[in-house]
Image (cartoon, rainbow over all chains, first blue to last red; front, side, top):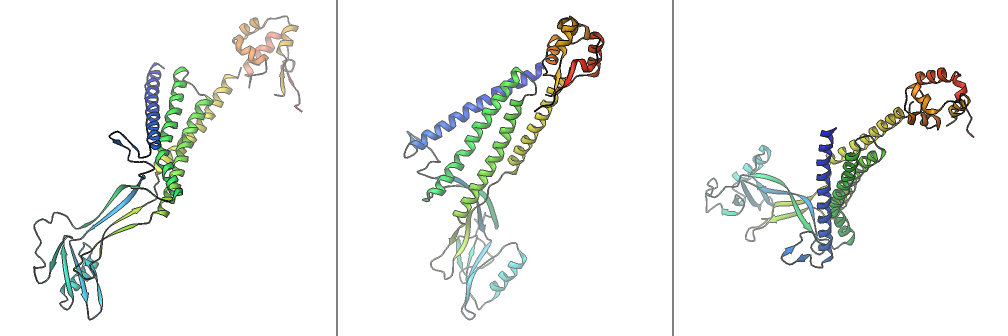
Length: 278
Length: 69
């Protein structure tokens, strides 16, 4: 029991400190929201209603080994083709590369333009330190929508995790405080665990709903590389897309806590019955 | 609860105090009080046997079923 008390005391202190930290974070965030430009002295808040709020996006960067912009006047076809690791695409690439009738412009490692007459196609420049590949990565971008509904949704999403942290740390603080005085089954204890479980589940549902809304409003943004002197030289080298955010671990943990609370409630009933059996 | 415990009536009839009964059964006075006030959820057969033996009565003398309306 002594060890239990020590552990509970440590957990109580941690939860109390985190509750205070969340309180401070939320207070500062709200103060900054009230300031019109979101800056106080030298400090600037990144997420602010005047600047926009962060959303997670996927960024796809397309760095080909070689890119050919071609223009076949006879067949009246034009476009671009990349040399990638894919055999199927590379077959088409070789066909266009070896077709002498087609007017071509080469671009090796993406930002260096060669003409067929100037350079040997197989010779690369020395600075080609970028490997040919498609790079995927997660990226946070700040979005400042003009639509008030979307702005409101992003505002809620931005502060939801802080509110959840505040609520969960408060519930944990009260729970450990109660356990410190009496380490036993209690209905209030079950209620607190159930509250934490439900709050985690609700947080995930709200977060996912807002994420679905933002993906509907913010379509994929494509970035093109364009060389004015070359005909049909439009090439998409990057795109930025939003996605539906969900965290099944948190959802699963929330549901587990709800079940645990029900189990504890049953345990409390058993204990109560045992105590009242004379 | 529809089960009424008439233990105090039986104790008065036998002119016995709660403390004495609790001591002879081997339970605490607090637990006997829970039984007397009807807060108890269950009673062990061993406890019932001892109560009946000490108070020289039948289980029906200390417990009564009253239908709830």
